Amino acid sequence: MSHDIITQVTPESSYSTLGATQTNNTLAPHPNGEESSDYNSLIHLNIRGKEFTITRDELMSLPESILLCLFPNGVFLDSQGQIISNLTENDVVYVNFDPGCFQYIIDVFSKAQQELEQMPQLQHQREQHQQQQQQQGSNHLSPVQSHTSATRNHQENILQTKPAIIVLREDLDFYVIPPIAGLNMEEMKQLKRGVSKELLKNKLIFSGLGYKFSDDSDLISEETGEKLQDANEKQDNSHGLGPAEQHLFDMLCGSGFEVRDKWGSRSLEPGKCVISSLSLVRLRTPGSASQKSDTPAPTPPDSPALTPVASTASASGGNGGSGSGGATKERSRSRSRIAQLANSATRAASRSLSSSKKPKVDPNQTKLLLFWRKPARKCWWSHGLITITIDAPDLAEFEGKIKVKVHVRRVWTLELSVIGVQ
Image 1: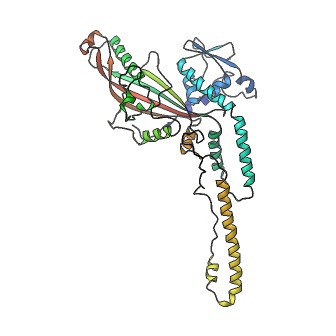
Image 2: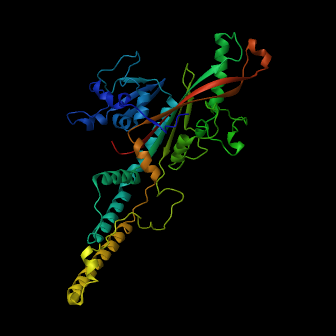
């Protein structure tokens, strides 16, 4: 398994290239400022026979990694597979995507949008409180933030004031090794169907990553009572999570995921040995975390402190002759005054920082900001034996139960989506 935590998606595959190949059916903002009316226009989607209606604004708010799955070629297609050059509300866009997964996406983002609409009043109160604190601390000395620090704080504040969703997608390709030679195409199809059924039963997110669950009951199917199977043995035959996987696991579990979480959507692609899974999890903020505490945050250890600096002249003045006693006392009083001002400024700056009562920023949120509007991928291979039930004449010697070796290629795509930010 690669030690790279996650690999950045190349800009060439970005959905932002969509606007360069279309006319007024693009999802990019209209250049003449008429985007407000265009964004409210309806788009009719036919997703594998199931119809959906969505506004252009709602479609634009979806994460880039999901848009790439919906429109891999960056264009709208009709029922004949032809590009719709002038999209109207009478047109129907055909999309090759799982309708159940799309419904799951719409439900999660609609709920987050509703929560965002209920937040303005709370946000207004919070801004008033911050303004009052700024006015109270306006007479104190406070450190000046750099442009980079201010930008980072602004992004972190967005995560505190707007709902954010962690988008984790898995594309699993599996390859079945025939147990005996001479199997025909139909028998191979039965083997692949049996393997796909077993892999679909295991919906545990971190099982594919190689996480070893301490309780065996976690690996028992609630529906059938059978043990869940997953070809997650690594190519180097190592056990548990490697350093890169452990880092990714800790970051996700510290941001909203749970160890025993399951995929929100998991389905087999028609006619392919590919299983697509998706999980949309709300980002856990300090205010919503279960470990929320009312204890005020301590003063940051790296807060600047002003301290008087003793010069060489002042240090030697203390050892001078008695004839300079008056000048020494005058410099001493001057230095004492500077020291008092410096100490007062230090305490004022510390009080200003500690009295702001800003919510403590989770370091995991800072890491996830790297994936905001920048989906990234991680790919790895694994293998294992899958026990399946099969009914084939040439495999009758196995009495319906057969173990087949399976090689699996997993691709995880991670992205952070912030609701209400275009």
